Image (cartoon, rainbow, N blue to C red; front, side):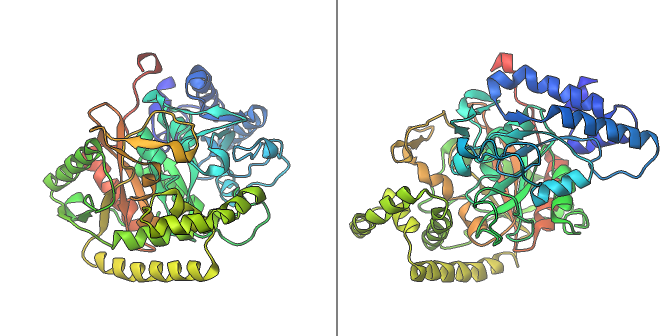
Length: 482
């Protein structure tokens, strides 16, 4: 019966509905799986087992009585530790927030709970969800199930690792700098970054609790082990018909633009090889596949950095903000002398942008948005890399001392992790992350399917069509063999 954990969420729900397993039994199996690998992976870092078991028993009783139940009734779930969950810590990786349990559910958490999900734990995150590696002082480091010496990605890293190891079948992540897509790519699972504004951010930390404005660039979206599960959970989170009513598509009918070559966007040859091979497989299935360069990458990155750092600056401690402002003059000089778009100078200038500079970046974003709309008159989706490298070894040094090493030995700036994810984030576009294959070193590589604003149904349907033809999630090797 433990094989049920290898099913995707839809398969597990069907087993629950068909009476092949009870909600309490599947919860106990899930917890046994978690306990067996927790010391190696450290994906789920807080639990609420007593209330979860009570919830599961209640759902079992209602099912026996023939009561009407929600779409996720009895399914065990974990939630990323940036979301408020009643009765559980909501630390966002900070000790100061770790004991903050007397909070109502975040908006999306309330939605899945209403549909009968059994929430039993919180998945690990970087401090304030601000890294592509998942580690913090209170809970430690989350490892990649494919190679425990490497990062699982961030900031939804614990979520992706939990999915890959079968500890959960669904997760809710968030993304302002690739935080849904990078962990999905690094752990070999699926995620969906929605069109900006479609899914409520209420109860997500950061920003600080109580802020009512939707944070610019940030989105909340589903993570899963299949495209159909993304559609299921997105329909719950979005609360509307976009995912549920998107028509199915045959792969042979898709028009796909492949964005794989871009000046100033480094790409490890191993990643490029996997993406190229994946695009060729899609073409052999009859889809129209053509190379495309959708935007001016230099303008995109310049605007995105200002918009992103301006959004993140409000979350910095006061001392850090003062330090950044003291460095603005030297940073401006460094840029004039040729410091690149991924340099410390670019980051400082982004963090300390004036309102006039923010408005200028917003105008560039608007112009790029108009430009990219024409691309989607010719293509259903744009297929692009997510991260410039495969999962890399844990590196907890200060950001300024980190670098990414390609398979050919070339060093690229750590900030290059922003490059390929910038278009969808800056312009508020939907992007569905799907597994594309394994690198020569046996590590997962994902791609993103980017669609037009509001085209979430389109990217999700394309992901489903590709998965139906080429397959999708592949489980990592057993931990004993890692």
